Length: 149
Length: 482
Image (cartoon, rainbow over all chains, first blue to last red; front, top):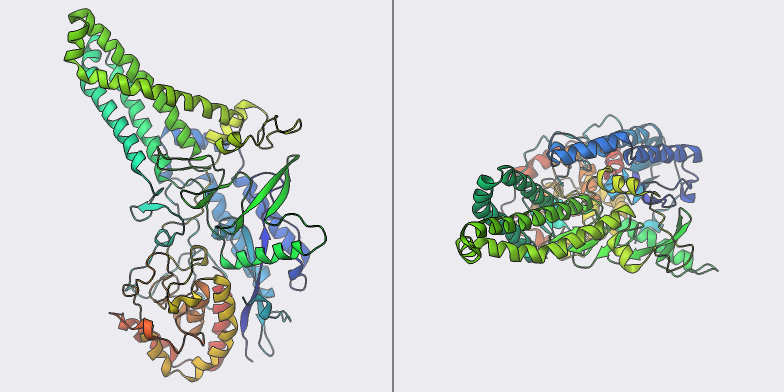
């Protein structure tokens, strides 16, 4: 059996600025993915990511302490220590990886970590299965033509 | 300001499953033979980079050097000429405090000037295309909002998000495009020629601490130089005091003129911080009550203390432009083609899509023409040095990326999938698209690592068709885990 997959299209989940400048992605389900994945799965992923980002940008005792300590050491401390934000970003990329492996890749989708897109969008790559049979990717009739530019 | 490795897209070289990792370190079995380009070298904005991407400044840095000279000279004169007298006459604490202030001023100046102010990377071609589509779709519907703006309600205030034509993104709230640096900067405050950089989200606190500490330093020096002159005048008369300590005159003059501007600026920024506004917003009067009775600042936390804490001690987001990462991902290459070979190198959508379907066609080509493949590879032989076409922002398409990006290498561990990955990924098209295949002229090897193509050769030959396809699937899935 031959398997082949090609990148059919990319769906972009945009930022949600309704709560200000904090990093949040829209939980509105993009219609192009209707046939590829269950709504709740994607929504859950986005919601979890939003909570992670909120945690990263949270202004509370810990971040103030970190800020003051860093200022007191003339920010030299950041040469050896990771900021709280960076720690959370690492957790996020681990989470995205895990979600991709468990949920998205089996459905022929791929989430790209927003940090690699400047936190502008969450890119969901949709793969179209072009193989004949026994493909592990879900078959879809999405044409690649619409993605051609 | 050091980019602490957040977003380096490294590939994993597992083949036992569809590898979807996008940020794990990998081992490269091959030695890199050609120098890899770092992202700062292909940065589309008008910034200057130093120390291999660690330092980032605006293009015009002349005024920054002036600032530096003024501070160094004035402080230097103070420590050399006034401090000896004062530390003896009054207290040695004076040079100590002065020293601390001086170090703090320089430290904050450098951090402000050298760090990434919060530049928003430009949209990848795919994103730009997607946005364009949405915009044209919207305008064809009944209700027509003016295109290129989006409205968002933040905290009860309607904020207009503008579309940036240069960066091809809708600017987040509070972001603005700096025309001097040609970048969109998040929470853009202003472009400061004195520090030679934009002041934005990531370096605003350093800027504020700089002007604040500089105010203290200026006042400090001013006060103590005057004290020095006065004390000397008691001893030897005013005129001879001045003659014996000429440096003091210079210092007083510099400090006098600086004090007004710097202290004034500090006061202004203290007001801005406490009301959580940017210079940009204040100048435009975005949240001024003169605009309307209900106009208020939606970003303010309501009280001065929280606003100050947020601005100065809040979390510091990492840089979104991975300056020291290596070029192979889409994010840094939205530049126009500069030679025939890179014709697919420019727009990502083209590269992805155009390559995606020919992928299937060329797959068979590759499979059947394995003999020709090594030839191709050597042709594609990295001419990283020899294709200076367009110079700067050209994606290194001349390298079949087998050499350019170490993270690509293990990926393409063996075959086509790697090549596919490369040329669809970074818009690097060695030659697997039909249009490119017949045109290797520009890609003549120039001291190319032949050993490179040897290893490639070894991979292509013995593969069976089925496993090649298998791996091409994986490769294709990977190609997008940019």
